[in-house]
Image (tube, rainbow, N blue to C red; front, side, top):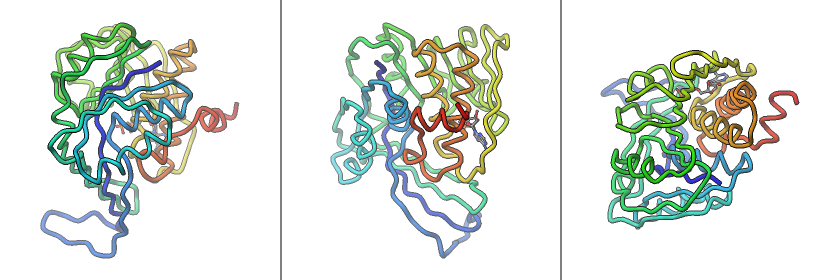
Length: 268
Ligand code: ADP
């Protein structure tokens, strides 16, 4: 059983040939609304991978909230929601033909997440699209494993048992003891324990179309695999495959794999 404390966003996604430069207008894009937010994405990913998941999050009293929560409801995530007088979080995403993105996040309601009580669980999972105080409170209340995906990069004074970072986020970790998974995009990931490499994995080759939620799929799969009692090597290999799966599909929550899809990609 995993409790996620994190963000919920509605992604407003425009696909175009070439990203606009400042001051430029690009016409001819197509548009979709897709449920996103790192907290929601990772909660959905854990659920698709077979875990029992609860998400603590804040949304606004607006029509975007229902749309943003649809993926969580569909995946059977139990919701512990705070309704606040701010707009539901939004990410303005532009994706070009090569899968390159620019993203502007308006946190809205996510910035008001506070004052929650966590039920007992095997693991508490946070990202950094919520206030520092919310991450710290989740860490203080975590009875089992505390896992932090330190994205977007910001130094918060907590000491996770398992941290997941990319190269840019690594420097922001307040401490680098415990287990740290460092993701390297298409090159895969390494697992460090007290700064020493203990495992390394390379993802299966995929045709990458949109990196959105690759890190979310990776984080969720690493945590779920470790909680299932798999070895560190196997957990890292599965996490890399989950990230590759997400990178090979468009959108955030629609691109998150089930356990069977991870198995299939690994050819097992
Ligand atoms: P973030 O988006 O958080 O920076 P990464 O880009 O490092 O995270 O991606 C997370 C994981 O997803 C990687 O460790 C890798 O396993 C997988 N991944 C990402 N991009 C690709 C890709 N182009 N091909 C295969 N796997 C990928």
